[in-house]
Amino acid sequence: MGEPLTLEEKHKIIDEMLKDVIPKSVIEELKDKVAKLEITRDELEKIVKEVIRQYKLALVEPGEAVGTVAAQSIGEPSTQMTLRTFHYAGVRELNVTLGLPRLIEIVDARKKPSTPIMTIYLDEEYRYDREKALEVARKIEMTTVENVVKSIDIDLFRNGLIIELDAEMLEDKGVTVEQVKKALEKLKAGEVYVDPQSPLTLIVEFKGEMDFEKAQKLKNKVLATKIKGLKGVKRVIVQKRGEEFVLIADGSNLAGVFSIKGVDRTRTISNDIHEVEEILGIEAARSVIINEIQQVLNDQGLDVDIRHVMLVADIMTRTGRVMQIGRHGVSGEKPSVLARAAFEVTVRHLLDAAARGEIDELLGVTENVIVGQIIPIGTGIVNLLMKPTPKKSSGG
Image (cartoon, rainbow, N blue to C red; front, top):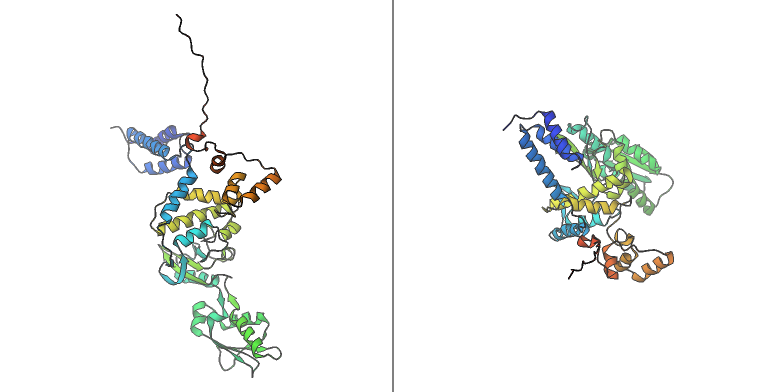
């Protein structure tokens, strides 16, 4: 059978057989896999040949209608999706849109997802300790006066508001009476002081006389006053994943989260595609599109090859900005005049193109169907050239 190969010998054989045949990333992966195996030269050569065979099988044939195949591969299983909103990982208070509504949201490139959620990973110092994770969560979660109030009353006799704070909620949110007092002072609605008879009661004395309507407006303003945390983040839940603690935030504010001590910026992500594009760039937005579509499909138990999803993400981000697959995005911005005209508002597209003197190169499917030419897909991409030779006459 032969002697088992050393690591150097394995690497040399793989490099020789696979050089210029398949990408370097695949070669490195194969080297890692065979490093642990005790195999002979013949066995390794068989493995490498099988890798080449499988790789060639996975390649797209020239002229393959990849767009149509991708659309069909995602569209067909999508009809089996449910139309429900699920609770997030068993947490009742935190809803997340899944299934078909979420898929439509992604391909439509909606400005804001209906349930924005951030997955916040923590750095080495904070990720293994629940208390430290909770400390970061409290810094992120937006806490308003309303969250820590037991009761709030308008007292026109005192010309002010009497705010009774909830001791339990103050402890839960990690807020002190002093922090609430400072937040109310920033409102500049009047003088704020702690009731000498009750350490959990704050009194806001209005400047000048107040009627009931104005006092009511001010009361609503007081309740909405932010004490701490990030704008847009309504709730943060601490979850244990394996050995580490991860924060799940209801609401999205990536820029704000990145500025908080203890957050691992390299892994923290949001499901808001446009926010990711703005903060982290178009490549990150492309990754989010792929991951979010895959997540939706996997949650529904649907097996779709990731390459179809990657093609959708590539089309949506190819111009350097996230575009929807629809009239205001990919379909509406095709370079072909005839393809745009066939999609909708035919006359306007043709008139605009004529006014600009646009030329249609007839490179796509739609435009070639319109003019009655063979479409450039499959066998239609082949140009056959013939060199006729004169037929020799037989002597006689």
